[in-house]
Every structure is written in structure tokens, then in C-alpha cells.
Image (cartoon, rainbow, N blue to C red; front, side, top):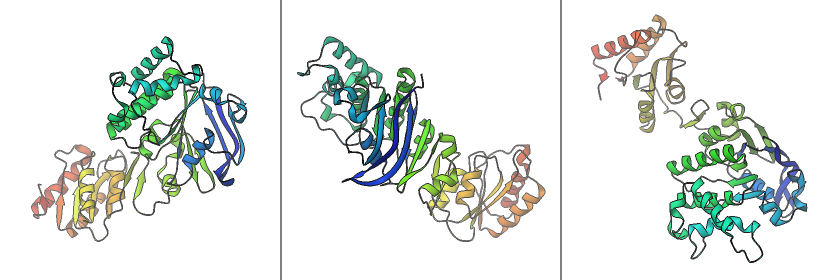
Length: 366
């Protein structure tokens, strides 16, 4: 368990013998998911294609179970490593079972004749990815999400030790993204697979990855456990984001705040202010928010989207000082929104803010 099965040592990758990224050091262990992230064009796919020998290395060595992959035959590699890349597969007159069964070819004879055992393993692979009901369907006539599941079944059907995936969630809706990654996580745990893949969706990468590799420029900028990589400041730096922000706590992106003097004051809390903040931002309306505890669900989004936020220290009742600051700010706004229906003892001052807004005719109920 957790033994090293894939290593890249001083790897250099590129095109036409020209190195684009050098000095790559990677160690992938069984039962682990390693994810490559980074800006578009950073070289994530180039690294994966070089590892699987679609592109020749410009330097360094890739070891598969401590053996130099360059010295291994295609059949030997195919029995240990399988691939799911982003390129669309367009087989003609093949059922989903036929496509999944091609994963058995490293184990068949030269004629590629499937044995009874090969057919049984193909059926099991389709079941594992919840695609058994697609077995007799024409592969060309199913949805992208269904195709990804069938191609994953094909990859698993090779009985690999290492699975390489390039943007496996591309072309998928949210349901199928989550379903595919859940299946993948189960296979890593049940079969003790090692997975290396690239992902654009940072929220998904943050949640599924055991080890994250950040590709940027001509090198690996940083690598480590997901909890160390996914910080708001570092992800913003890695992607060079100058407009908007990344929230590491929620794994979410926020657009930049509307500019200008606050026109609306939002009395939020408990996550109920977030939809209001985002609606005002979409409408280009600058707003202020408060009074929010720094541990409140609303607080990170308010900090990202509000022109001004009145905050209170965590686990403290709203103080007179914060109340007065919010009241002065609210006085300068034309209208007040309060999506919160009930206030607890800690937020009694926020209830008073709402009543104050009602008394001066600024509170909007819709």
C-alpha cells in the first residue's frame, strides 16, 4: 500500500526537441491522486503526454515501478498504465461494450480475440462506472458524460497500476463531473490505483487531490498537499488574477466588486447575505455589508464584493462601536436590504439596525 509506482526525475518536456518545462520532479504513490493545475497553456497536458510517451522527452527519465519506461515495450506499459485524454474518440459501428473491451487488448493475443474472462472483466468495468446499461448502445449515439464513463471503464479494464487523465471533466455538466470524480475516488480506494491528472476546475481539484502540482512558466512553481497549495493568496498569484478573487475556504471565485460609493447597505449573516451580495455585484451596484462576525459564512464574500464591510471579532456579540459604525454607513446609503428574518442574542444590534432602517423609510422588503 502507498508504494511509489511512478516517478519523474529531472524531467524536461517540450516540442521539436525544444524544452519548455525542465527540472520536473514527481513522485506518485498507489492510492493517491496527483493533480496538475495552472494557467491555460502552462504545459499541464505537455507533461502528461510526455509521461505516457505521446511526446518524446527532451531530458530526464520516467520510472514505472522503478523501471525506465523508455526501456519497456508498449504491451508492458499498457498493462500497468492506462490513459484517458481529452481528445474525442469517434469509433464507427462500435457498442459501448466494444469500446470498453479494447482495454483488454494488452492481454489478448495478436488477433485481439477476447476470452470469456476478458468479456467478464469488461462487464465488471462497465458496472464499476455505472455504465452497464450502456453496454449495447452505439458509442457514437450517447452523451459526452456517458462517453467519459465508458472511456473510464476502458481505462480501468486494463487493470492498471497508474491512471493518467487529461482534463477528464471537460465537456461534462456538473452532475457528470461529480459522478466521474466520485467513481474515480472510489477506484483509487478500492483498487489502490495511482492517478495523475490535470484539472481546470480549482474547486474540484481542491477537494479530490492528495497532492497538487502547480505548473507555471518554465518550471514547476510549487507542489504539496492540497491544503497547503490552495490558499487565496497563492492561487491568485499562480493564475495572475488581477480582477476578482479566489476564496480558498469555499474553493470559489468571486468577480471584482462594483466600484463607487455604497448605495445599498445589506444586513446579512449566516450565509443569507451571499445571494444578495452577488445580485448587487451583477447589477453593478456598490454596496456595504454588516455587521458580520469574521467567522460568519457571509464574511468572505462580503469582503470580496462589498465596497465596505463592518465586521466584528469571531464569537462576539455585535458591539456598540460596530453598531454605530454600521449606522453611520447605513445613513449614507439610499436603501437597506435585510435578507435575515430572525436575529439571535449575538446579533441583537443587527436587529436594531433593521428597525432603524425601517423607521427612516430605507428598508426594502423585497
